[in-house]
Amino acid sequence: MAANLTTRSQETADVLGPLMENMTWPEVVEAAEQGYVPILVVGATEQHGPHLPLGSDWILPLEIAVGVAKRLKVLVPPPLMYGFKSKALSGGGQRFPGTASLRGSTLTALVHDVVSELARSGFRHLVVMNWHMENVNFIWEGIDLAREDGGLRDATVMSMDDPERAFDMREIETWMFDDGFPGWDVEHASTVETSLMLAVRPELVRNDLIADDAAEDHPWYDIVPEPERHVAKSGVLANASQASVEKGERYFEMIVTEVAAAIEREFGTERHG
Ligand SMILES: [Zn+2]
Image (cartoon, rainbow, N blue to C red):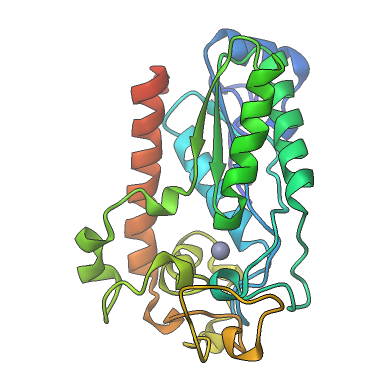
């Protein structure tokens, strides 16, 4: 991905990063001094139906972070590609081959350590951007433990539970959902994620396998172990067939704009000249 991104080794480059794995340590020092803000992406390795890749939950937010970095002084550290376990009624559950999850304490420790290391590198402002909803409180715990034990130093962290949810869905459902918004718990591998992937990484979408599905029964509570009737057979939890490139491009642009605006508002991060 992002093969055309600017790197420091190019003579004309006046923008640092954005992918931190391609930077050197002196460039990190320079970036921190210039007020660059790292966006640490946290996702999951989780089934996304027969048509989307296992990495959807980190590939999509990584593309968004790179999109933000084209506008603002933002860097993108290597993402956390694994996340907390999947629940049957919101992610399909743990029984799908390929889904590989962390226990909550592991995710908390990962976030705690990486956020502390970014703060030690000299960044005064950090963003943690999550995409996989089951991660939310473990990420918060990792950030808060870093605050408690001094790992944050004098850095401030903005935690984004899910930029996919930055908008009031009543305002976008008229053009996003043919039959109304089904709810975020079942918007898994469905209209939104499929549209976004069609827009940013179309080569990863198996177009001929896009199909709607749902669990036979979707109550408001969970059962452990999950009964068969709570697991959507294909791993798609709603209407993937309503996805389109146009919806994805429009929503991607909205999310990038909203994330950039939030970072500018809170941290005063500069735009690229
Ligand atoms: Zn997802």
